[in-house]
Length: 166
Image (tube, rainbow, N blue to C red; front, side, top):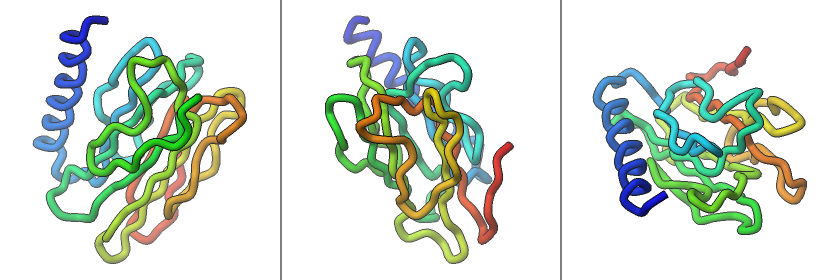
């Protein structure tokens, strides 16, 4: 893929994120996955699946953001194949790799300065394993050192209750 096409894909994702921000004021948490053979997916929000299930496609990177102007800072860190833990990202930064064909193997997400009564919950779908249990508070989803990829992620902000995905 040429550098121009890569830049257009990244710009397209940024424009899509802005569209979500402008039209989804009631949303608490939005995120977009970079998926093997697909590239950047359109952002999804509040518990919707980013990535793929049942297609054997690895997630390579992810961006998370809070579309509300106030409401705390969403931060995260990805562990990628052959590179280990990457830099901490917050509010829309890219965690993981793009253009290298490397799987994202693990992910940690946390919520800095959340509004009172809110917490972040998330889970991952792993190759050969399926959906993991719901995590929160900076706990890791995925596995390191096992050669397995995260294929999908779901995340949501809780208002004091546990969240359950079907």
